Length: 206
Image (cartoon, helix red, strand yellow):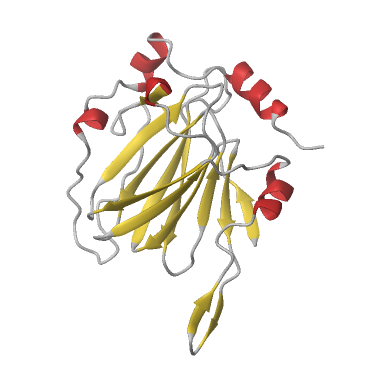
């Protein structure tokens, strides 16, 4: 397994070693001890989610209040998506910055996202299937969203799918009605850098 920190602190691209032969392929899709070496903290799995999306579907930007927050480990088990991590931590030197990784069923990359960061993706194929390993259970009372098309964030959503065809973006009514980054900050729902870092420190091993 190889890891690469993303431009947003608290997020990593994980590339597994895929063993291929005439029978097919085998890989370790998730290994807790390996992730602990990368992050310096444990990753308890409390819930596993799966979403299936048509090409052009945009899901997010979603985040959970900290504490407790929700760390995520995501991989695309069918098709392809552009996975996006957004720094929503008020007080962060990279507040409002984002980074993206293509996840697909060929390279089998994954993205690890710590608590306090925003997450979204755009499906590049039909039947794009994303599996989420979550560190805490879903808690709707502390789940929030920021509009994925906020001009201030200026996320470069792909205009074409994996097959080269133009994409028509589609998102849920909830995500379409989500506040902008500025509105979410004014409403006081964004995580504060100091609280997020204190929470991260409490989870370190050793």
